[in-house]
Length: 516
Image: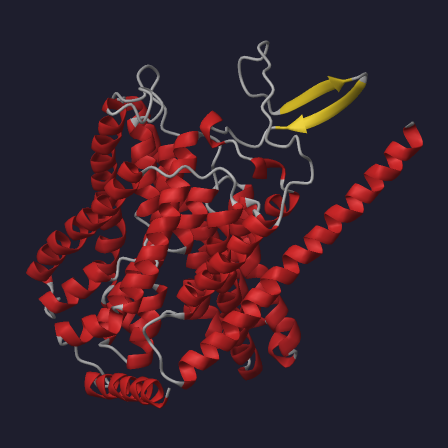
């Protein structure tokens, strides 16, 4: 009996690897479709759906096909077996089944009402990324490119305002979202949609911190194409870059906040410990990233590496990646380290590079950013159907939408008012309205939400985060051009040209309909 079993296990292993190849092929085709769609949009100057929105549409379509066109390989998958002797979930479980011992590893908690026949679907499991792939592979190039491509003169001219929006604004947004969501959670408890004690105030603050990470990639792309006022672009871009770093460290600090007695009570010692962790991690990550960039600057300045552009580019890339890995290995935040590594590299190292290396590094990180960003947005669409433990709660989702809009308003308008008291060049009201409108959620919020889905509250947060990302990218991203026209924001490419393009599209559609 042993031999057939071993042969069967080898076949299962081969099947597992074949499914892995199929998974990569799916993403490959999704990216090809996205690239062709981007070309089509750029060729016809179509600005009402950004490439990231298109990537999500393709991901949703593919996820829908995978969800309902594939079936679990084992008919008993999804069956729940009671084990009364176990009181808690163990990291590793050894199970004796007819004198054969099998090893099982803990993945996450699943609601009894959420168990479905797709739990054993190997294809869906393969299409569900390990969160470490996002943080270790996909996010670093995106964050580094953001720092490396900063327009230094405009960034440092508006540095005080950017820091205020990124640090104070993110903290305000986190607290406001946390308080509003706690009110909705209490309402859910009263309506018997949640058990008392399942969702603590710290969970609401955790949701507030991850939802404070804005990602206006769609808006910024349209701003860049239309050559919107440089100060508005810099304020929004600078806020989103630093805000991502702050939100990541803030999420980590809140996750380790643990009052000794009541989780919903304020514990001064735990609070100051979390604040200390936040400041220590942020400062340490900043120092780590800057240190690696300075090493790169010194090496490129005092060696003859410029004679060998390939070696110079390789060293630049590896030192930048080392900043991220070193920070993670030291218990700091690699995303913050690689961001400030990118900023410092752009300020110091870039000028020491040869002409070939300057072009190569710019193109390399721009390409990696493009690819990683579209993979993430494709996966967001897939995850709505391939993630097997979604928890949809209408009241929680409604509360989240209300909370993020109120929090964004509490962030932008009061801080802008205070900043205008000391700024020579004021932030006009139409800029403030545009910044309020541009508070989209994207890759960082999703990556923070999917990083921990062990409990039911975390699964509810992931589901809600996905829906908010879809809505803001499609609705607010698509409405950027009309909003610029309505707010009368000055452009190099005038709104009249955009309106003329819209009119041409309308005439074309009318002609086609008439011909049919």
